[in-house]
Length: 400
Image (cartoon, rainbow, N blue to C red; front, side):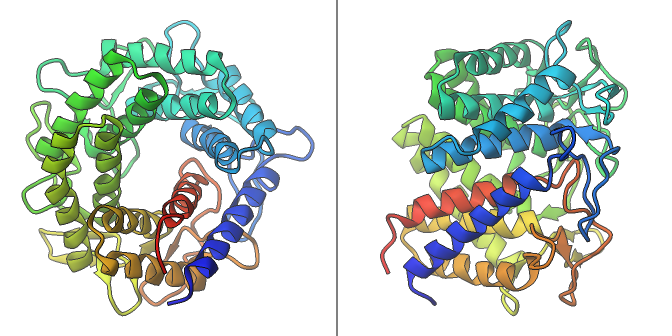
């Protein structure tokens, strides 16, 4: 173990490196617009399509960085992405945000993924908190109203996966090609939970509080199973349809659920959730953590009893956040030690010291998978940027 001051310096330096990469490499020098894809070796593809998740997560990251540093150094970048979102993704006719556009801004996929709407609320609310822009908060609240009108299941609770551009039902509601075509999923509801948490913190709206409380109940009682794992997909009435374990989502869920409950300042709720949250972290350490390399595995398939042992970038930092949160609420120093052990793995294997940013994933033999991009619809600065900012803040209260 190094001194805490050393870890703080390392986290600060890597956060600076991430923000430097995304504020320079990902904007076209000629047009100033976002480049939709950069490959493993740094080759840029300015004619590639752009996804809403990439743009909304960039907007959130630059806004959050300004709030974190208490300055507006990254505001021009947040503004540039916000302008792009409002120009090309926003649907002025029906409300909400479409999924994908071409490099020229023409709509490619017009459906309204509820996952994307959640990230819109998340990004616009963070922008408001960073800069005090009431129009951004109004966009978030307008979208909250749409979500509660169209996307909430008023019978069984939680939120459906996707709709057409005009908010009609769809035959295909999948978030990606690897997902199942089922009406409800963990991932969508997790990020609605995240979005509603920050929206409630910003507004203290009774309507948002009611929705957040209801979703906390659904998540803790329906989505997390008795084995301390999240279930990935469900029928409409929350009947589980999948059995694999997604270790990154398990550990991410643990701390996002806790922070949602903390936002409500409800001590009884925190007392009820604490055993479940710590149980998820302990199960992760038992089943999804490789003690030899101090890294987090990707998935376990219960039907074949096999692992996907690749180490994905986002899973490592979600593990660090979940473990840091467990240390904060339990005081058990083992969790803190694991945070820094995973960080050592990240430093050694995941950070690309030649081309910048982080590799998408490392195979079980310790080599980066070069077919995966550095920037894409799903490869964004949100996971590692968010983790470093939050870890630095948490470490301010830690003792050596």
